[in-house]
Image (cartoon, rainbow, N blue to C red; front, side, top):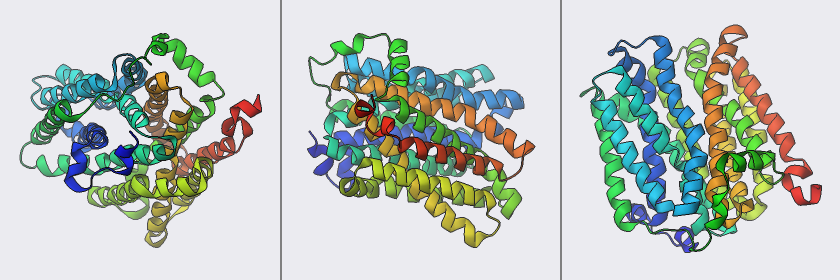
Length: 402
């Protein structure tokens, strides 16, 4: 089935293919998450939410993804990818309608919890890509999913800012409608990708599987790289608006444009460049290059004081991160057995969710207590640690290292 990647139709027809539907599923999940970023504080204040409650409202989404990503990955191994992806889209649609028409603060929390649970199906989406691609094509498929992440972060805040002018509820209604439309397309056109007769291995208890994956020589180093790198990158995202304001006098508009710049560049890299590079050089050289580029750019960003330095460094940052994260997903997928793709990729998604939960708190504390550029510089050092780990024989060839 790897032809889904190689011979996929172009233009709008792509969104009617299995890979296009999975791409849209992840994109819609991330658009929904992105819409919340600029709107939740003001929207929640209308319900009398405190600053602490607003922070919890943002963080509960990531917490649900940490808990449920392995769950949905494991379920997709047992019952198939299609039911999980369909359920995700339907759950997201209900969550956004609840958020848009919430009569009280507790309903906002309920909506965010439901959307976090639904969005945790990212592992099933990755596993679907793994099912329909060969090892050679997998980086390209994972790159498309990574591009959906980048585009979601671009489109989401834009929708939130533009449509909230019409009505505060309009962005959430639009997100619900998009999820429901994609559900209808997926119901009609998304085939099951799992091969019959390969689900028995998924009966292992999920928490046992999680601990085993983290402690294994096959997956532990890669999951560690994803988590540590996630801390560094999400920490940068969390404080960049404050950093840009203090260093360059950026307001909301300038900050939004910077994220658009990063997101578009990273989406281009993840959507095509990373596939060509890995086909020519192999996954490990590309991963190491991505880690070193990200490390250098974050450190330089922490010291940047002029715009002529800022934007070239941001371009390198987008390139490095665009090479790093889809390649990690592809390597994990290549090492996972056929009947455990969803479970293992779910553990990887949980590592990313945990980073998204910890990094904003840690980065903000560093910003306030140590200095404006400190979260970026320390984030760069975290990527240096990842790059060193990626050079070890244990990470690259766990069997030979035994």
